[in-house]
Image 1 (cartoon, rainbow, N blue to C red):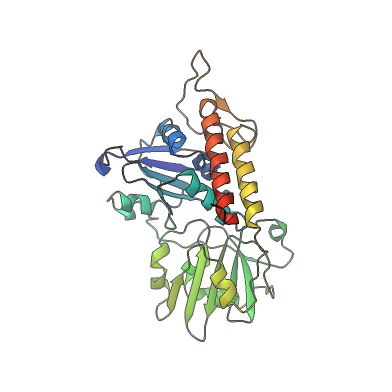
Image 2 (tube, rainbow, N blue to C red):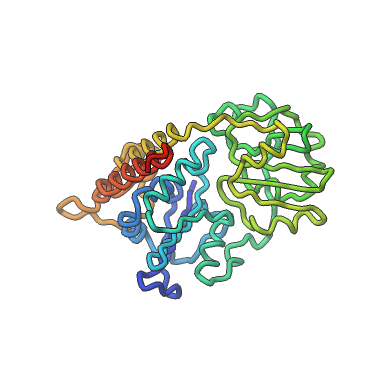
Length: 333
């Protein structure tokens, strides 16, 4: 099992042609928590990983990617797992990330690793699946065990204002199927109404021939989905799941989000991550341990290890970002 992550770093002088590329076999796990440590910690952390000797991972195998441009102060990121991909915590996690990188442009790359390549002036097609195959999740029946999770890996598909289906959020987003999806759903179990904090969604209005879709991770070719639906109007809502709640006439109503509690939840998860209580095997960190202990790694649990000598500064960044985000949320900033 692997959670490949790709890290691209632009030199401080801004020369894109001399960008540095690193990778980690397990680096996508906890990557959004890594980034909450802020630029002063994250840059040396990324550069401590193994160089990507074989180049960029394609969008089939890349589970997370980061591009850091210190010259322009731009951070591009996507992950396929973590608080940024949980509907309950998405907005809070991105708030904290922006506060941890003050003065930087922080952007989510919905098109996966293709967007960092395009930013660098490289061909995004290099990371596309050469076969161009679409693999979407199976339909889920009411009572499926996945739907009992707090953050189920599921996609809600609403059709008009009368049908609601749930699909496993594995592989491609169902919008990639095009109109053939509707035929598949004709025999799919109906759920009546979805009140779950799902990973992604799609609304189809057959009468108006309109499609709207959103997701919290990434989809190859995200900005090209209109070509899959000839004769239809396709709107990409990015992570704005509220658009589907409005369009579906009550068929999709996820639990309300407690913004302040979500900020606390993400802060606590980041603190646990950076104090080592959520660590596991090293992610390809090329960090020899010196006699003074520098270079040592923390970790005893599920997520990969983090460098012990960077932890104090990381925790300071997490706490500072949380305090700023809370002040903004309360309107006292």
